[in-house]
Each structure stands twice: as structure tokens, then as C-alpha cells.
Image 1 (cartoon, rainbow, N blue to C red):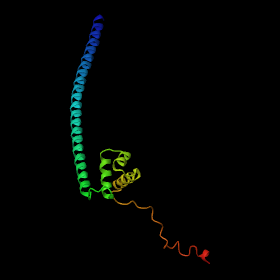
Image 2 (image 1 turned 30 degrees about the vertical axis):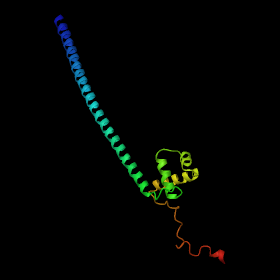
Image 3 (image 1 turned 135 degrees about the horizontal axis):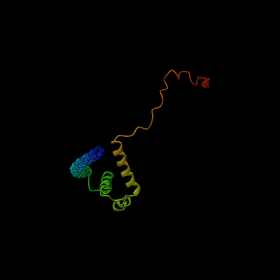
Image 4 (image 1 turned 45 degrees about the vertical axis):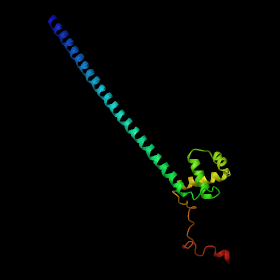
Length: 158
């Protein structure tokens, strides 16, 4: 009988050791997988960071080129050095605004009313928003030629 208890104790101990060994092996595999995932996440993060840096550099280059083109267009659109001409004044207002000056600073520098500076800048914004096309005035009135309008109001005329 004692030998049965010994074998039972031995079996339980062997199962416990096997379970512990399995748990340890599973823990080691999990740790390795976590280390691999951490390394891969670092590589992905570095790649995304490099892409963001490249896109930012490209954005800066494109905006710089656009600004150069806008400045060149403004230079070519200015008819003369006479600031009393409306086109020249508009050109100077847009250029100073592009440099970050406030409406009051532009008004003081060009010696024109601030409301004129605001008008020029607002018209520029309006043209930018609408793509240079005038916005429709509103919904079109209903057609008064249809059958619903025939005879309508004739009682009032009589």
C-alpha cells in the first residue's frame, strides 16, 4: 500500500514538473515573441518617422516654389511704380499681407484707408474660395409657365 502512495506522489511530482517546464517554455517563447514585436515596432516607427520627414521637406519645398511663383506673378502683374494706380496698390497690399503684416500696418505703410486694404484682402480670399468664379446668387425661382400657373390669379384681375 505504501508503494502505491509513493508512485502516486511520484506521478503528481512528475506532472507538476512537466507543467512547470511547459509554463517555463511558454514564458520563454512569449518573451522572445515580445522582443521580436518590439524590434519590429521600432523599425516601423523609424520608417514612419522618415516618411513624415520626407513629406515635410517636400511640403516646404513645394510651398516655397508656390510662393516664388506667386511673387513672380505679382511682379509681372504690376503695371508700373505708380502706387496711385489700383492694380499697383492691390499688388502691394497682397505682397505685404503675404509677408505677414496686419491690415493696420499695411494701411499705414501704403497710406491708404484700412477699409480698402480689408476689401482687397477679402476679395482675394473670396476669389481663392470660389476658384475665381462668382458664387450663384441663390436658388432659381420656379418656372411660372407650367400648368399650375395657368389661370392662377385671374380671379383677382376680374
